[in-house]
Length: 122
Image (cartoon, rainbow, N blue to C red):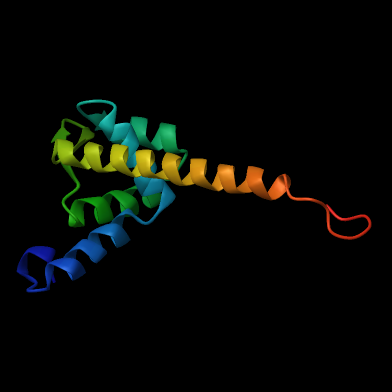
């Protein structure tokens, strides 16, 4: 059933969107598409290192969630983000990740500064 035709609460639709994003290669594809107006499948395949069939599966998921759209020109297929908000979402996620890693780094520094416990402790 298409996402368009489902009558789900918004939080479920949002969760499904994040499920669609929940693969490192799909994030990488979106990052590549964020850096250019459009990218050919051949370039996406080269830059991700994925086999054509695996890339196709990931692009299908991204299309299903309406994050990307495609256009065939001759024998080439080009992909682009459906909306600049997709790139903004990735940028926001990266900013949050940096904040979390910075916090974790500060906690790690604090833990390393603790006195040793017992002989031969780290």
